[in-house]
Length: 149
Image 1: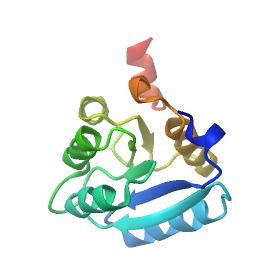
Image 2: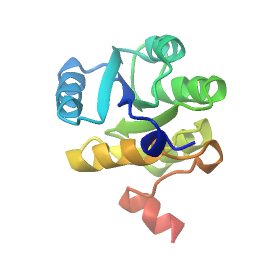
Image 3: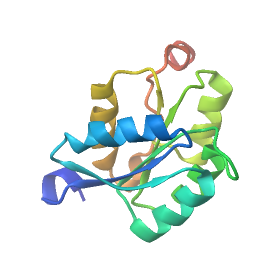
């Protein structure tokens, strides 16, 4: 079922990032999108898993390097237990090993923290609308695109 086409409610987004300034900026950015609402913020991977389980957001924006439980392990736990929740990795890491680990953990997309804001918004909308069997890595990084093609 399409979240965007059939649900007049805004997309619910959980932000998981241990850098408060970045998380606040992302939350403020998404606040300007009438079709999205930030339902929570987590400062580490363990908190992200707990909040995702409680809140069941459409999308989790997940950093990789966080205290207690890293974003890759948190992604695996979320995608294993919440079939309708999509995880988008939003990280400063641009190496192919991290991208591949994120994909193996079930991430629907991997974006660089340096990407344009409108790309983050677009990807959140895109992955929220995917059926459960269409989870795949979006080729957003030059290194990934070069290897994939």
